[in-house]
Amino acid sequence: MQIQPIRAAVLLTATAMAAVPTAAVPTAAAPAGRTAAAPTDTLVSSLKGWARGDYPVAADDVQLTVDAHRAEPADGSRRPATSWGTFRLYHKVARPGRPPLVLWADFKVDCLTTGGPTATVTGTLERTSPHHAWQHEMAPHSRMGASFYVAPKGAGPSRVGLIGPTAKGRPKVTPCAAPAADTKVIAGGYTLKDRVRQKGN
Image (tube, rainbow, N blue to C red; front, side):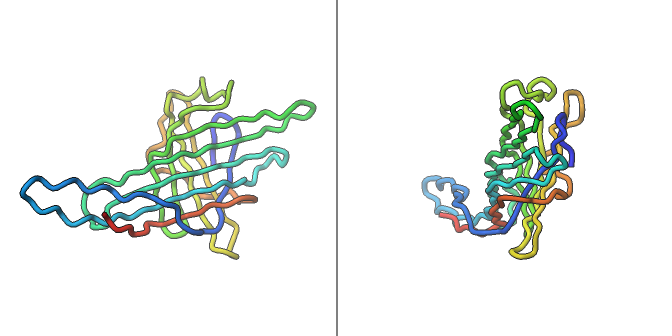
């Protein structure tokens, strides 16, 4: 798992749990004189929560907070899926003899995919902590990808993988792309909902 330019690997997941509310895709009104089409069912997915990941420097603290959602048609139509939400990468860097350095970066979700106990999330960089090196080293709206394995209860550990964002001039991480989830979750957890059918209105 790679995080540039700071040496941060990261975190994550845990037991799959209950759902979070999401909205069905709205149905357009029928033209005058015609019967409205039957409402379309939607598959909704979400990944929410916070976790701390194992990190080679024991005194450091690396965390990932996620609130990601997806809606897609359940009828096999070609209507595109939509994803939204946010995630934050947090890294408190230990500095012996000095106060720790706290770094964070917020991302706007542009893709969530789910499958059983696994998920991937990508998002574009929106803002960082003051004086963060990424303000200068990353292109505007650089993309980061995260992968999650949410272990069933009693079958841990859960894991996460993280890549990007990439420095200016380097190829960007593509939407929905993320590496294998290889870092153990050591605290916290996530709630994963995988493509649950929601009736249209």
